[in-house]
Amino acid sequence: GVNKATVALANKLLRIAWVIISRGENYCVRLASAA
Image 1 (tube, rainbow, N blue to C red):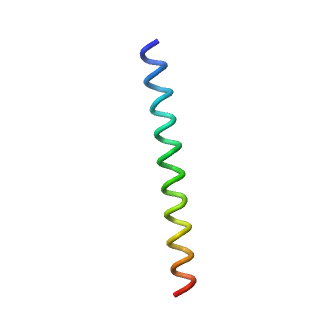
Image 2 (image 1 turned 90 degrees about the vertical axis):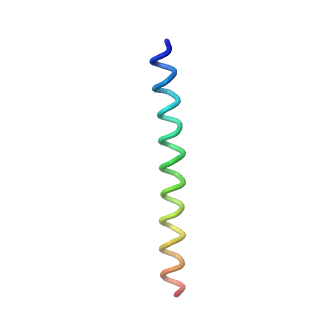
């Protein structure tokens, strides 16, 4: 049970991190295009 909970939490953190990284890349691309 503990292992499943840990894996589930890790998956959530990874998804959140991926979204933040993806947004960051999009912003960098927009700034580069604007410049």
